Image (tube, rainbow, N blue to C red):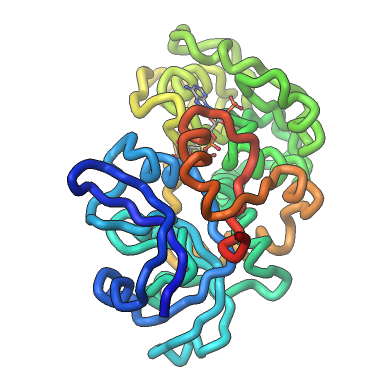
Length: 332
Ligand code: NDP
């Protein structure tokens, strides 16, 4: 059996190519996977961009098929919980980093990594959401578990026009929150308002170092940017507010002080999607299937083919992608 996929190599130097892959090669490099999944759709997330451009060491085994997200149908199985014909979702677990990933027609995956497709969802919708959307859901769940309610005031979303940001804006607005969308792209104003943002904030206002404690504004924050942006967001939190921190689009550092924590009781909640336990994943996907506005999702999604992915990877790292990129693996 032959199928089309992207192959990353580091010999003699880094290369990324769309090519035909033999089943035997998949069996050799993804032997740990006990299911063969025929993939319908994948996505391009920020991390896929890093892998496709080799901008940071996301790939830790070579050669590698990238793609941290996939949705498709099981074709071969050794696990009765996922019989042939089951529709499944894969996010993270090192797939596309240390195990052959989903930017290809087929993947061999471990059944313990998979989420069964929720009833009201299909493979296309699941991948329009992808890791970005599932992470946005994890952020909203984390904030609500910390006590956030719509009457507490404005919620800030940083990197709002990106994938995680767009889904976070939509989810929060649908749940009745007043959402302030921080973006560096003024051209996305109408788009973000369509997704439910009440108002916009120019991201430059959060990008320069500020005082450890600033005027209290946010009841909560979903932060995808990190660095000085997160430090300023912390400094602007209301007493008792929480921040769900999931990203580093602006940098890995965090130049802050303990003042927001010890003087305003601010809580910083880390959010990781890659190794999140299955029960939390299932809860997040169930919530997404029940409550993510599908009109918003259509507005934020652009569909591309496997051949477009390498360019798309460079664009997402350059901050040029709006919303979500859905990869139709069957599109020529
Ligand atoms: P996107 O590229 O789609 O979105 C990132 C957004 O951040 C951009 O659209 C832009 O928004 C903003 N941005 C980009 N560069 C800068 C900068 N230098 N300073 C300030 N803002 C910037 O990526 P994703 O939404 O897929 O991912 C967002 C982040 O979340 C990434 O860092 C990613 O690694 C992380 N992530 C983490 C996960 C986890 O498990 N913790 C899972 C998924 C993602 P705008 O144009 O609106 O300003």
